[in-house]
Figure 1 (tube, rainbow, N blue to C red):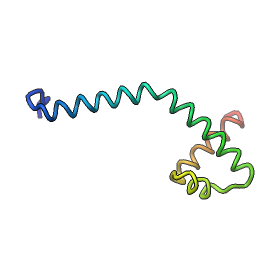
Figure 2: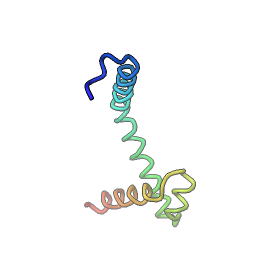
Figure 3: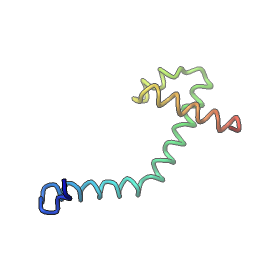
Figure 4: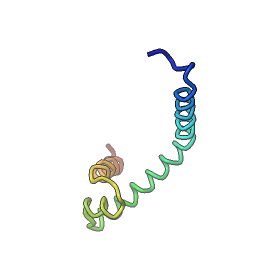
Amino acid sequence: MQFPDNDPELSGLLDHSRGLTTQMKDHQEEITDLGDKRRDVWLALAKRGVTQPMIAKRCDVALHTVYMNLRRARRATDGG
């Protein structure tokens, strides 16, 4: 398939996608900062005995997301 320059609809969708990608890049630092803050909160909760499934359910994320973030946080606090 050739690049759809001759199809205004496809070209418009590609332009829209490029714009969304640019916006995502523009907000990446903010997203990273928010993720770091959330990870710190989850670590504090875990240290107080809140289970990973409870954190996942109350925060509306997948259990694996909580697990990986807590693993990363613990690795950072343990020095690697």
